[in-house]
Image (cartoon, rainbow, N blue to C red; front, side, top):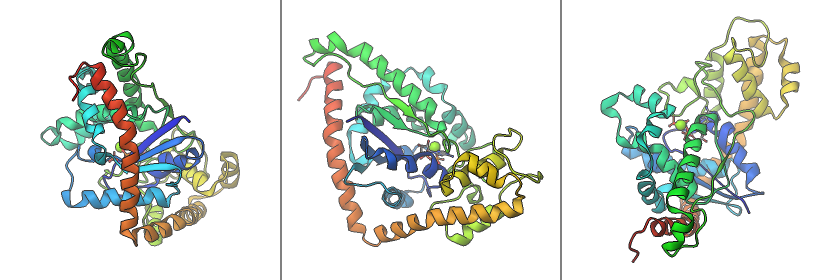
Length: 342
Ligand code: ATP
Ligand code: MG
């Protein structure tokens, strides 16, 4: 079976963007593919963070995966740092990654500008190399990602090709390996709608866990009244009708897309239903649709968290399975690169 891997950082509360852009799409993939969904905690320390919150956020993220419908009888769920091969392969890959490739990454430029030079660790720059390791270790065929990760995935592909060319094929055979490609080249899976859920307070920037204002996002665990309040106060415009795809109305397009995805309706249905609505009519409608969609997820989350040892077991099992596969790839890389093996 073809493989799919994806992950979310435990950097804060998961929001509708993470759900609509990533996790919701995982659910439909787990029947068809062999899936690995992890919590990328090593990525979460690339910007200043609270040590006391990291392990709780890691568990929360895992619980949300399950609450959203990730099924452990089909998918492996684990914590990135529990599988040592991620950090190790990253080191090996970083030896063949040109710095110029990393300097061009938009996320690095944006995040480093916001944090200020004194706060930016080297890991923020080398983040995409770790992401490449996350993907390549599992010989993944597909990686479901939001728009924001497209550039990183492209770098992963280039890096995989570079390593295959430098160390694979006949050279690898001479080192005692099987020859051929060391890494499979992964393809992105980008959802048609939801790939980029925008902030509630600015329709031009993406909804983000790490954005300072909580008003800018709807968190998956927000209580009803908080969701209602955020939507009530979100940015709109002074038009008296609603429409998709008008570049002058990014907030309007974003809210309609969110409504479309949480209601399960088609774009045409939503366009029809909402075209002559005012904001005053639409806001209660989208509020109810979001709350109705999140309610069962929140209930399952509470259930999972009420029995903490259950989650520990899930993560241990997931890590064991992932380690087997990851170690095989890692050993191949060491061999192909000519290291003395134990
Ligand atoms: P951070 O601000 O800490 O980077 P984030 O909200 O960007 O957090 P990530 O953990 O970086 O979340 O990304 C997890 C997954 O969610 C990725 O697949 C990413 O593409 C997707 N994603 C993140 N934000 C959005 C968004 N606004 N719309 C759609 N998908 C998103
Ligand atoms: Mg991000």
